[in-house]
Image 1 (cartoon, chains in turn yellow, red):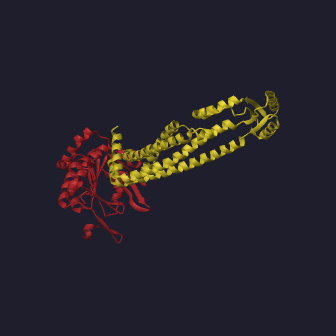
Image 2: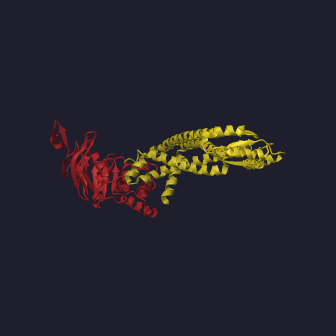
Image 3: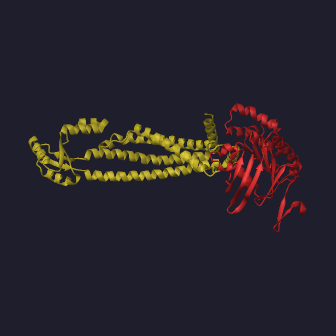
Length: 296
Length: 239
């Protein structure tokens, strides 16, 4: 306990003495974390978007004409079911379609109440055994009577998934690079302190201080720098993100049919991730900066 | 107390010390003399385990120094006090804090520090300087602070590297007296020096090193050989 206080006191004194550099490194790590956070937000939202789209467009959707009789529809279903490629078929009425849309629009759902008449068609949702046979089913469905149009996005969804995966890998690489740069920035700041106190370190070693005792204050210094940067950047990102969600979240995005990840969920996770990152960046930075000094 | 058994240390092929065997008993006061580059610093660095020997073994206080793990080194060094020609005090700490620092490093309690530091300052004769900073002290007083710091954790061995190198002859004499007192209380002392007058006056065991070899090990006078034209000639034969 005493040792912890000793370290924190030493570290703050050091940061005070080294104000310019400490502030500079807090800012640069904050900047790194901000960029990192941006990538994180994009990745998370893309993931959500992909999941939503996947769930929606996995099926071949056959829209039925409004004036098609129930008999025609039943006949169509029978015909489609007879196909080898078809796994199963669900019928969705106009009312069900509206209900689903209302649910998705969430708070803006009331907008749909002002519609005089339900504009959505009823539809047949067909799941296919094998994706490659989709074309045959689509052709068949198009040829049936009482069918307005056929929608199938599987390929698009797959392309989207591929693009998302690529983006994720890309952001991961960028993030790793940013973390590395941050570690170097911290290590250089702490190195200044280490140099300023090299005489002291040497004496400590002669007296028989353990490496961890010597490292303590420097490690704490790095961790405090990382901690500050983490708090500042996650605060900033949460603020900006909540504004963005406020402005476009409920209106525009609902129409794109995919919600944004809620601010509070994102903020909590971001804070934890940034704190962990900030602290480890700070700690790694100081350990790297002291490696040469503690060799012997 | 300190044993070197056929110890060799080379730097990129250059000899630091070669095949050196020395035995220093507990409570001895030993001078280590020789020209610069003879291997004295190598000897000290080996004792402190700042460097590793290429071959041979070193024992200090029953511990095999040559086989210490790096995590054991700090604990080993607490048994070996060290003072230097340039004192190596921390300029931004007072005399009290400089000495207390050595106790903080080994996790002594505040109460212990408060009790011990004034006692040790008194024993080296600078109890009235506790609140002064190093640059307010004379060179002799600074060396006393350094000695206080070196012995406060009760080391079994005290290594002194040219402790009188920066002092005038009178002050040097006082410091030697102080070291003699510390030695009389049972601490083994190894002192590296060039000061012939001090060595001769103290009349202790003198180990002379040259070219990485022990060339003389006797009690009494400064034994200093010079190599001239391939012959080792005793200083007294030339002068």
